[in-house]
Image (tube, rainbow over all chains, first blue to last red; front, side, top):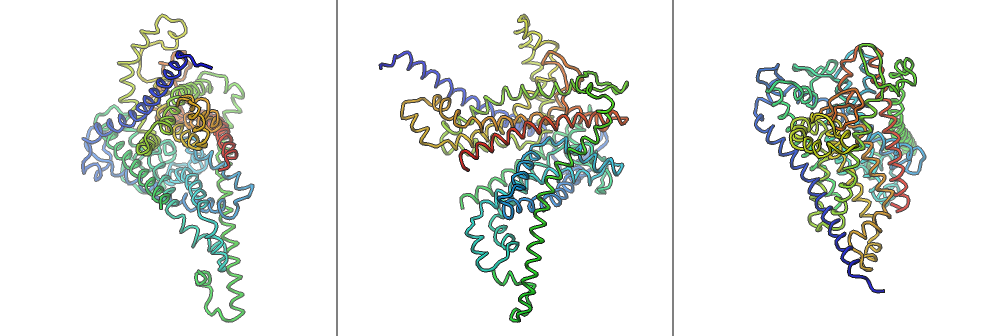
Length: 283
Length: 331
């Protein structure tokens, strides 16, 4: 059967168009990354100074920094990781070690994957209902717990995945010299999977350090220096939110600087996490 | 490792009684650790249960007062205490649809580029760069959208579109009105950029799972790259791609901060995509701390419940699709 030249030409044309579209789509995707980072540098870099890290958030019309917001964010992030990581690692351990073929494990995996993408504002509402409404006031603790709820599914997922990569021969070797299972897990499996589990925690930190929605009505905001977690605490994302939407020029400038700090911190974290993960794979 | 096992417990391991004591202790320890991990796994389920129960509990006053009319009322009036979910639900769905309309084809074409066209050394950097888009916090998309993207749309894009479609029946009402810059369309466009990395990275992964022999066989028959993609790779990975799209949709539906900045927070259903609107998450973010009165707060929580139910269904469907694909490829 002879192919007509017209058919060939049409197929080639179609192929060229699709390749062109694929190139354009990739350029389109990368363009946004470049645009966003460029605007952040352009608008935020000028505001970077020592004062940003040493002074409190100012009232409108005067100079100041972001110290209380940065400190509040750091404290809540650390607390959220401290609450969420152990729980997440234990749950991931059950799924990969004890209950690998359990029905419970498949249910937990399914639910965990849904929690992983659940809207963070709903988690804020949940913590508001459970903590803020009960205690009668906004508090740093509520914000830390809300962030912990976001940390847990990330850590569960990576812990399970990383423990699943540990070769069973290692487990069998440990069992054959009489090591009880709990010790085998802690002394053999955790050690082998450590790099991957650290990656999971780093990814979780990257995820929560920019989260704003769950903090809106749990920690609220605080214009002054306060690390009293029973009171509203300032946090970087909330300050950015508030300052960016304000009509004051110096507040907006601080918001851009804060945005620059958060973005580059988060991107650096996720690149480090990726490098750690890829090192593991190649070794 | 054996010393490790007996460490701490064994003072003198030679005596028979001590040995059995140590063993018993290890047994108890083992059972305790197992119980602890199991409890943690169950805690994950309890979190989800807690979210559902607390949302239902919080939204009960509103649902009891308004009943079914909550879902079909457009008005949202704190003064008269009359609340309805139509405008936020409409905004949520329309912005997410706009986002998917753009992000799905673009994301799939990027995945095609990464798996079929891109030179090997460039694959990782480009892949990571696209994934970094997912790492940028959503509040950054928000302020960027409000101060950079929306003014650009307002000055350069929207007037041109209004002029171009002004005389075409359906399109003229879809793209009508003064170019505010902020509005439903702007929110949809920003959501499209935000969910792009989810679609790209999952579809790239499922494209890479297509057995090379299938692709090689079709290239051997003389197929073009496009024909291999269209008639071999896409049919083979259809379930996974649908899973990726649903996952991205779940993200778009629940996205809060970026949308809050650029949607305009207007509680009405306007036919024009240029008009300001609102979404469920933006309404909650904007109004929750200022809500006065139980009914107002409760109505906002009821909106949260609706959002959670919608995203739960979408995400569950996404996971189900991806699980089915995993089962088939045996990974």
